[in-house]
Image (cartoon, rainbow, N blue to C red; front, top):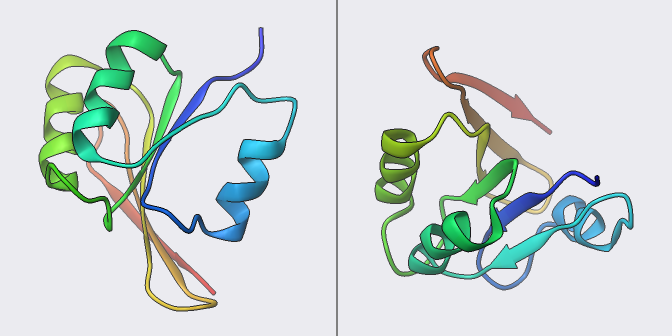
Length: 103
């Protein structure tokens, strides 16, 4: 069975995320709003979530809180601040969030 990531991000995916959606080794679903992210968690049953802080609709931090209330799903919260800088906060079950910055 192929990994099933859910990407919750607005239009204009970061190139790295766009490559993931095209990779045949993954069964990737992309949604564009916070509400559709929560709906997809029930319907799609992903094994990980990549959540953009630029997500329209339901606040991304609210989405994160709701997911944490019902699941220990691995989540990467990302925020693209410029053409070459991405900030990433990873929220893992049972541990506090860790933060990394890549350039």
